[in-house]
Length: 389
Image (tube, rainbow, N blue to C red; front, side, top):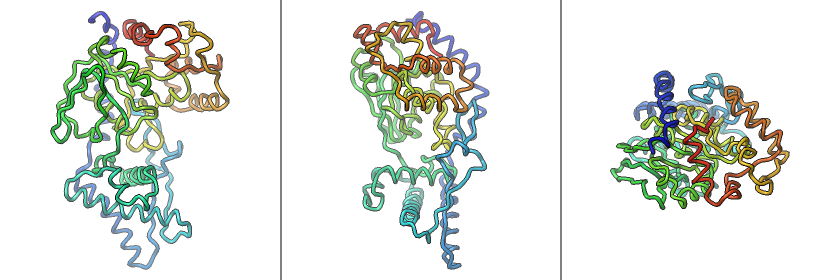
């Protein structure tokens, strides 16, 4: 096994050599905000609203616009960051639109909940908050967006508001740790998975001898790796999935593993525009969460597969491939224009191959070569020969 991970070991040495500069860049962003400081920020917003009411003026809230690329800037060592001069959206309490009125009510109620939570050191689940008044919030997504807007407005990470997001990801492999409540979590079972913690920042005592972390795009692929006992065959390693577009906790967990273990992190995604975009979210972040990027991104993540160039090299049968749709082509062209792609020339070449061939492929297409080709040939060879970009 030592020979198996020779290239992985060389990669880790390179990453450690570059770690100092990167660590200094992001340290100031990743520290939690003190409880009393968060309370002060919340109270200032409340005082502003009360002051407006005392003057018989309509209270307003100004929210940073989190959906525009123009409000972000790219830092190669961190990812997508929110610009200091972002445009804002004003929510007025006297607006005739019912949406804005309801939005203000949402914020007011959430602020009260935050204050109560912070004063008594308790943690709030966004699910609990939603079911406390589902008629008010209408959908869980409405509440989640509001919490993120408040977090962005105050310029504090969600965890500093003591709000826990619901996790959807799973993790398995050579890993054990303690949850914030003292529960010991063991992830080493070869056939079962462990849900990603909803309180990643509270995790301590991480113990692992893993040589690498493999971030898997889809749950189906993740389950296939488990069924084929990938973590046993390629021991020691850790595999994790956010089950598609990753939730915040899955991204936090991958980031925490990197910060704690300092081992290579690889991405296994479909050779299609959607898979590439998901990999970019893990690596560089998203526009909507740019304000919290330094605690979520893993700039050192590398693309293990499925590479568009692998499709031709491995002679994947044509009937296992899927033609690119017009939407796929538009998405791919849009990805090529993003600021972080220009610093990844090897990724650009792979995307150009996809555009030229006008075909995409799911990881499952490798089963058309042989049933266990992914876990017994493709990934072992990638790790042995350094087949990542």
